[in-house]
Image 1: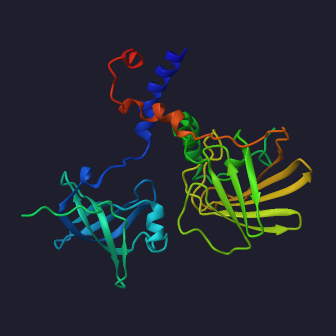
Image 2: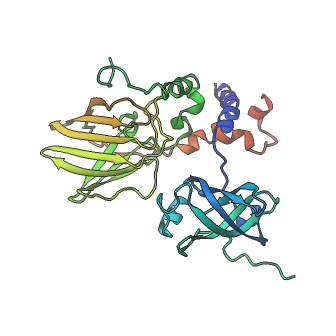
Length: 137
Length: 198
């Protein structure tokens, strides 16, 4: 009986994982590189207020006009709220400057350190970089 | 038979295809099967008890299911800073009736296991009215101009658990679905016969 149940669960697992959003809770250094600081100026296209890390999507325009989508990881939604963010500060269409650290694999993903808004206001993103230090060159 | 007044949820023509797709694939898509928080009003009619703790300024509802909690701010005009599973509740008293405005609900919760859904523009107006020492009337009106063509209402009685030692127990849901959701990511143990059979 138990075994039948397990087999059913395993059969369903594939379906459900395919349908569920990306989930990951990790140490900073598992995914991001403290030696690859980035500064991205872009327009917010989506904000995912999900635990354990919120994700922002921004369209970054290069000088030649090419638009690249970046995903930026922040702290948890509650951390962001406590640092002063809410649905209005992070409205889709807002132009922001994000400073942070790029993913180790070189993809257009970053761990966000802070966001500067047009009016000069800067808010911390609850980065998991913590005490990570750039390595000595 | 049913709790929806008029018997039908008035979907906009643009929303109906999603409801049908949800229904067709409900076992895989229902957020409840993955143990996400149930949202409002679904938390009220999950087959689990809840407990209301009351003070003058705040009323707290503790739900056994998933340890969900709501704080109802009495006579507050504040709105939610961001959408969440259980939303944001502001309440007021109309005579004997507690009226609660719920907004700030994210678009991910469902009303039931049949794929009935809403957008994050959902506004739920709940009415809790005592009808006897151990029963209450519960009504919830749903307004969501992105999903429904008009407001619609459900109503049902709520019964107090009168057992001598009635109490909320812990029902943290995730441990029961971990295998269902993530079992295929688990490292296979040498003596894991269930996995061998796969």
